[in-house]
Image 1 (cartoon, rainbow, N blue to C red):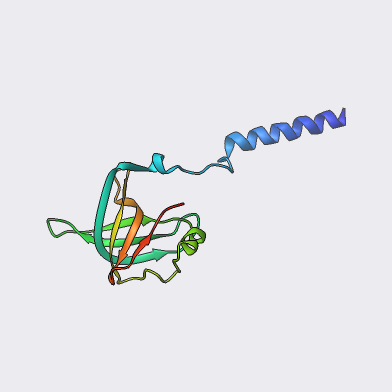
Image 2: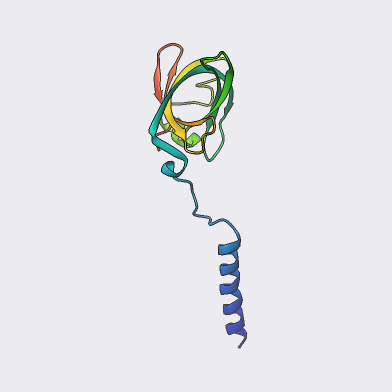
Length: 130
């Protein structure tokens, strides 16, 4: 009887945790967050770099047609993948001028998946290819 109770308790705890918390295997997909049919090219100045998991990212100020400055959030691959692609944490730093080819976020925010990044010296590097 005691073993049966422990079994029920274990299964109940698992079911509770599965439905109440986020699944430990959950991960957003590219297609859910970004629209591959909406490519974008942005030119701007880096304002911030975040070298953190699950995705590195950097922000750039871009001047639009009216002269307003808009800050864009550009997502990269994980830092581990970025290192394998030849990046270091200091590859892009605040003040650098960059051109980014990417895809727009589906939610209409000023966010994009950075696929290719062109540095001011003309070097082109992969951004997000996991």
